[in-house]
Length: 199
Image (cartoon, rainbow, N blue to C red; front, side, top):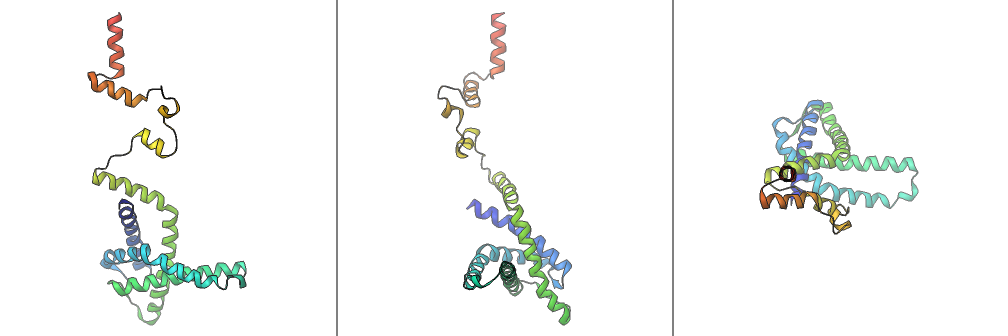
């Protein structure tokens, strides 16, 4: 659940920014519709876009043996553009985004936004791990979820904890914490009291 919420929220913010840029640099009129359009666009990108891409790629794979490397790259670009174009059409149809500017403006209002979507998806693909990581941290703070301790994190990452490597070795934070709970003193305070008692 958390994974989907974090992914949707981070992609939603990114998509709203892309839509605002589209509204600013193309004949498409976005305005306040960017909020609802961002939700629709995010849902399309997460759930519909992968299915359409898979379908287009399966159709293109039938003739892949007949193309050169340059031809294959060209087909990949046109497939990506076709997917972005379909996503843009659905976004315009289901939201308050409109295309203006007469015949010339209408042409560019339909052609340019998919290019901006492709650029936006490429940028998001390059930074999605960092963005979703920060969004996950914010989600944990908002829900009050505690972060995993060092021993659990190291074992989850496949790194053995000191106790696993050397069963007799104390885990400093854990053993020190237990002693502090027993008498309310830290290791440093306990050492100072021992030195005073011996002196």
